[in-house]
Length: 110
Length: 118
Length: 135
Image (tube, rainbow over all chains, first blue to last red; front, side, top):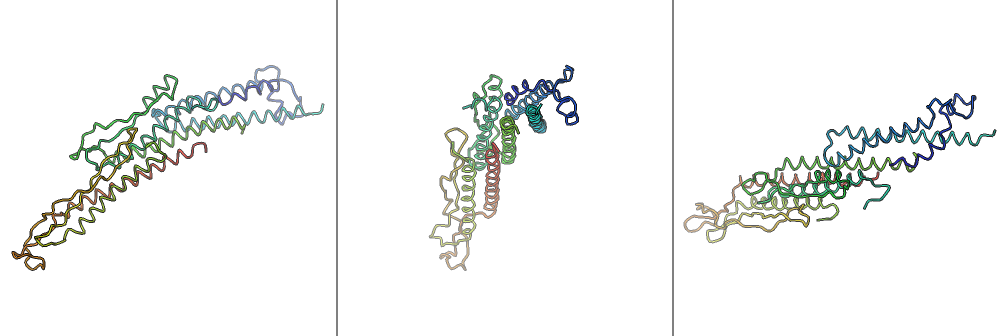
């Protein structure tokens, strides 16, 4: 739920391969895809979003258990919750960096 | 009550739990205040089963808080408050309050991350 | 008491009731050696009466001191011919207050008071966690 606003952005950056935004590759090809290996940045991000959704669902499930008094161990929840939060932040940061890179490329004089 | 887009079933369940735990807090304080009151029966607050059922039915706000009187054996003065039990239950209840509040805060933090992109 | 911080009011009512009891016990002990002449009533032991307060929502609103009951004014007639208040038969009247009873009551009242102080502090923790929502 929390990550819906991110989705449209993925579509926008799909064509850029993850290789093209690594600093080491700057001198090589500027934009393009990595030959259709299926490992495009969009795919990576989409997988990551699945992970985030999974982690959030797990934390949600345990949060409800905390509310109904069915939580078996405190650490189950606190760990799941922290992981969901960190994974979400990680994904958001990756998105931010990718967006920055995309913007840099768009501004490039050809 | 629910703010659409901000509040989901989980935050609603957590809010209901906070209400239940708050009521229990007061009931336990009342039991402690009446530990020597003749004829006083300890009060017990339950909301967990109702909340779990309401969650299963898809509407956490349908959960309710029930208060009942303890059936434990009474002392000579007709009072059945067990002070050690109450003090322990009160501490546990306060910790559960913290846990549930932390869970609610974690939900809000996720939203905040999504909103601010930070 | 659907009121903010109602657990504070409940714990405070408990502290108040036990404080009243402690005062009564202190009074009983202070006066337990009051000697009176046999034509005067003896000091009467103080008993504090309390009652639970039922809140509108069944959770309960704490406790209330409903009054003070007095023990017997007959006291104990003792032979003490040297006492200035002794009557023609050398008898005086002393209060019928047992120190050991009072010590037991004092322990109970003190423990009850402390329990309510702890209850207040625990309630404070719970309220503080509610105040941290959104932070």
